[in-house]
Amino acid sequence: MTVIDASDRGPEPNMTVIVDGDRIVAIGPWRKTHIPGKAVVVDGTGKFLIPGLWDMHVHGASDARAPWSHLLFLANGVVGVRDMSGPPDAHAWRAMQASNQDPSPTVYLGSPIIDGPNPVWPESIVVTDEAQGREVVEQQRARGADFIKVYSRLSRSAYFAIADEANKCGIPFAGHVPESVTAAEASDAGQKSIEHLTRVAEGCSKEEKSIASEMQRQEALFRAADATMAQKIGSGKSIIRLNMDVVETFDEATAQSLFALFLKNRTWQCPTLTLLRAQIDDPLLANDPRLKYLSREVRAKWDAGYYGNVPPEPRAAIVKLSRLQFNESVRLVGLMYRAGVPILAGTDTMNPQCFPGFGIHDELALLVDAGLSPLAALQAATRNAAEFMGQLGRRGTIEVGKTADLVLLDKDPLADIHNTRSIHAVVLGGKLYRRAALDAMLAKAQTLASGQQ
Image (cartoon, helix red, strand yellow):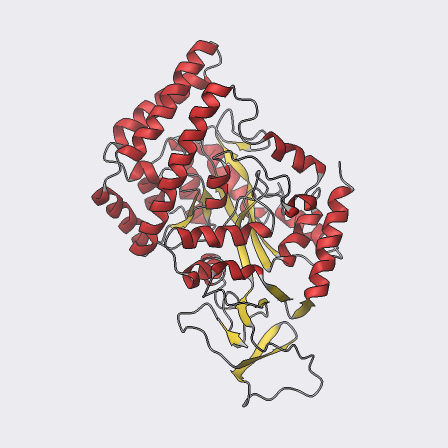
């Protein structure tokens, strides 16, 4: 078989990989590599071995209502996920998860979403001042969160307090760049990753300062408790226009300056192009075979779409803006890749049209469309993920001594990135799951999902 180890060495044909327990113990030319007598042999003739994939932006992986999602991840070669809205107590969740009988991807677990007053999501932890910001960082660190998740409506003072405390405590913080902060400021503050390219396009605009000031004013008017419907409509139109202005005032020199800062500060980007494309509001394809793996609760949310409650006229304007922003995001990802900015592959599962497991293959294809090479796209979901988490010494590439998280493909992903879908077998922590076992996982996921409301 050909080993694509996710380093920069390139593919190595006619290789044998030996696994003992949960570790890779030998890699070498098949004619020269001794296979232990009692070994379980998988014939890799004509096949391609890659490291197990990571989806670095998901939701629901720590949700007890969605056990079927774990099976969908593994059946699609996803051996690990970064959960971007974790439980209140990560230690308690891990203790409960330990008793789960089904195989599960490794979960890199974020804190609950930490947001400002009037949060976007009701279950968020609301932080209104610096003291609360510092307190929540310490609380979540003590409860075992792997990182702190920051969100859009944090005030400047609260955000920078969280950043300072996280840096002091040695816990990463990642998420949205708040509306009150620029992408450059977030990078300098030590934010480890920026999700969905939030505030990046603004940071590439030569009019960033004036647009941001007016955007904050219009957002405040839109959210005001005493705002009339006419005022909300007026502010909504202004917000859409300002977002279009962001794209129209792109400046190459400004953009390259920001990208150089990202590179200097090692600020990772997780673009979630899968989500950004879905937000264009294309209708669900009723014949998409992947829909059968969703619970009725999730399917109902997906059927409503992103703008189900928005009247036709503003909905059309929002969809037009979403298409413009998606195209701009694709361009920015290509520019950042060429500038050397580190990139992660993430989908924003469980949002509408962001499928658990299947979605990572959609994301890899979109990254290639944006200008990444197939190898670079693979690295975004393997080596880069491990490096981001500080775990490159034990996972993320195919090397002796590393955890045996592997995916065997029937077709060459470097020839066509869509070939990551041609999964023949998955190895999770040294345990082999052949195609029949993966199909059984899909069948069980479908059964579990259909049994939920």
